[in-house]
Image 1 (tube, helix red, strand yellow):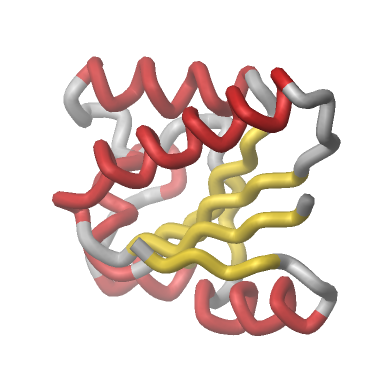
Image 2 (tube, one colour):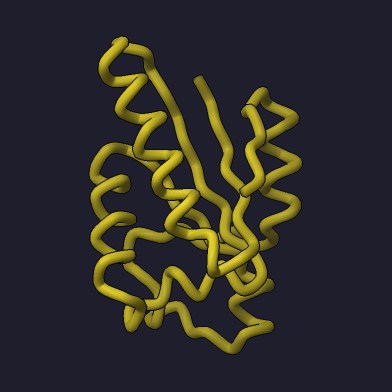
Length: 114
């Protein structure tokens, strides 16, 4: 299963991470291969800042350890004046989040917007 989560609201991180954790648990329990990516755009990229709530960081780091990929929109980073060294080291920065979403859908990723 190839799943792409799209988040643009900084207040929805807990909901997104809870949904992903439940999905990963299910796939692992049923021995289903998965590729899950989270694309954060707009104000949601604030959740990737190193100075963020440590509880949120632990949840994101735990899912990253379970092979979930976290991506940030470079355009949003620029717009919000967030430097690369201000976000978690394991976050991959893509040039444009919307382009990334369209490209992933074109190659068969299921799209979930929260």
